[in-house]
Amino acid sequence: MSNAIRARRWGSFYVAEHRLLAMRSYLRTLLVTGFGNPLIYLFGLGVGLAKLVSANVDGATYLEFVAPALLATAAVTVASEEFTYPVLAGFKWNQIFAAMNTAPLSGLQIVNGMIIGVFCRMLPTVAVYFAFMLLFGAVPHALGVLAIFAAVVTGLALGTPIMAFMATIKDDRGQPALIQRFILIPMSLFSGTFFPISRLPIWLQWIGWISPLWHGTQLGRVLTFGLVEPTWLTAVHVVYLGVLIAGGWWFSARIFTRRLSA
Amino acid sequence: MPEAVISAAALTKKYKDFAAVDGISFEVAPGESFGLLGPNGAGKSTTMRMVGAVSTRTSGTLRILGLDPDQHGPEIRSKLGVVPQADNLDQELRVRDNLIVYGRYFGIPRKQVAKRADELLEFAQLTDRAKSRVDDLSGGMKRRLTIARALVNDPRILLLDEPTTGLDPQARHILWDRLFRLKEQGTTLLLTTHYMDEAEQLCDRLVVVDKGTIMAEGAPSALIREYSTREVVEVRFGSDRNAEVATLLDGVGERIEVLPDRILIYSDAGEAALAEIGRRGLEPITSLVRRSSLEDVFLRLTGRSLIE
Image (cartoon, rainbow over the protein chains, first blue to last red):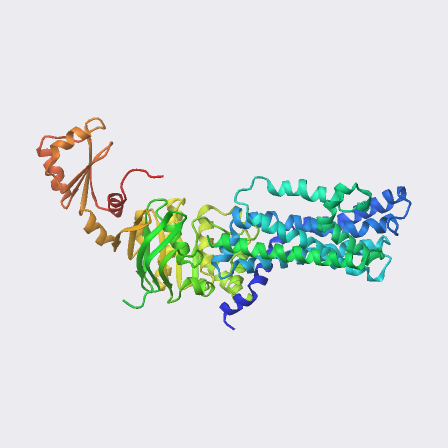
């Protein structure tokens, strides 16, 4: 097989290879946060807060209730790091996307490679988190392991639209920080992470309904402790997250391609 | 001429109403070293991006290695090496990894690309910096690494956009030496520059571009013959007297240009022209007879005023 054909077929994976190599430069941070976060949060909430909230929430102990939400949040955190600065950097700071594009890679391949690369970081991060959940006894159901995939899907459902948005930015005026402060943090407060959104006044509940984090968290709860909800609602979670991923991916590919060939 | 590896006809790129490249035509033969000269904003980089099969053209025809970049972008790009104006090295990766990762983008197997990376580090005189961070390299080293990276796929055409801008003389000369070796090995070079000495050193043939159109085309020596004289006399009478003295220099040389700080007299016989000035009783504060250069051609064709 000639190199050119190989590049056309496997180009996305070469981009992913690049992302993974680049992550090596902050590997220590990845490991510390990957192991430290679940330990601190599950310990703090499981041993601390859960002692205060003795009542069952949605049919589970408080730790069981909050753990799937933390799991999804871990994936969202990875997404909010990997789909923001690396995209700005690739277009603007050291223009490596342009470099990839002058090599035979297309905008679509670069987008695919970014997603694969992030997936490769997200999956182990979430898996480690899940292992800690097991350790803290936060997963009563055997099917709970599937929550790992629900979390990864949640991360990508938020991440790919962020990537599309980041790709439109010509000048860095602190947009990643704005996303962090005005989208991600409020989203985690109103997405049923620490309490069910039904406890919110109805005029605030819509934030949860449009939040991928809420859909992902609920899906995780169905899997880890068998949260009781209508089947159609579970289907809505899956479809909604899928649509976000597909939409974010499609817009990203379009925006990358246009911007690189301007 | 053997079949051209780059052939552009009436090539045009418009951004809304502004024509960055306005109908330029040129051909580059295999193994030739071809230059695009022009002031900032002349359309050189835009042309390079179209030739690099990255940016799409608005109109005109363009063939790279016989293929149309609109239809065969990735195929063409797999046979090109590109050195952009600004180094876009990957700062998250070490020096050698930059070469390896870039080689992988071309689908080169891992083992092969590792070997190639070592050869290129040698070529770029960076072997001892293989594990350095990109940020720790000097400007000249970064430039050499960018050029080495562009060679990772053994390209048939190397596109260099202002390869030595911002480098000190030592770094420039090392780079020229490396580029000259490539040329000797038969690599086709297409380069933009606004350094005339660079163009004279490296280009077999060049076009002078201004405001998106071609002003002149030919070998450096032919352009000098056509647009300038063999020699130039530079005389200074003091900035307040230059204009006044110039009126007394009628008939000396073929053409006279009065600048605020000096007078340039274009002549095929510089010493004789200087002697004639002396005979007319004029004593310049300083005088200099030099060979005409491409810079004289360039300034004549694109003007001296600063357009930004």
